[in-house]
Length: 207
Image 1: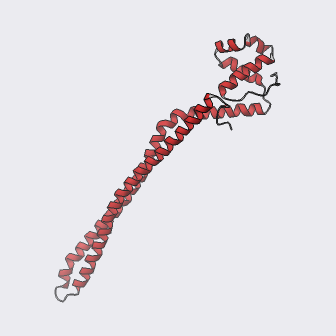
Image 2 (image 1 turned 180 degrees about the vertical axis):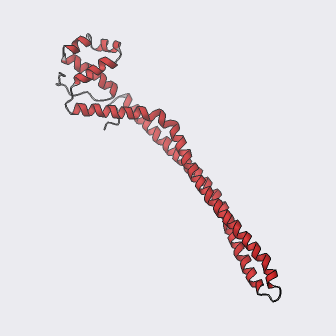
Image 3 (image 1 turned 135 degrees about the vertical axis):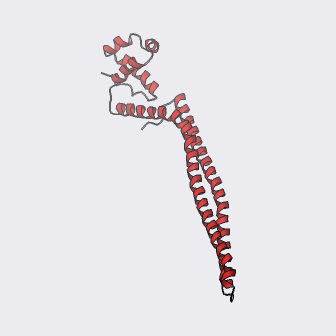
């Protein structure tokens, strides 16, 4: 697999842009983690309400149990404490549920933040980058398998600007039809340079 152009400014540009994309992804992940941590801090504060409510409920229950043993008035005196203990338990449970919900929301908010930031850049850059990797890799494999440069020369005639072809290879079409090895190599080299692939070694005539 060929990830970068063979040489020249295009390779440098690809390396730099890949590095910038990686940095952006790391920043996006960091910001997502910050969002999640912020939500976690809020959840911790809410969890303290849960802890306080549980402690209060335990204390009220103990007090109710003690007063419940008071002769004659035990039940009447203990009843408010038991009721308050139940309310404290409900408060503690609500705090626990809220803290869990905040943690879940914070986790998804962090993931969503990172994903949105990455998607702001990735669709602009990745399609062209992947297209280069696939095309360059296929062409490199074609040449490594003794592929005929004639096909690349034909591709150059079809894709390259006419003015550029005429300047570099006079009578390019006629010479290609005649199987001129020099013209075929020159046309193939033009196309390979545009694709970012190293030209084949000399001595492979084409047809």
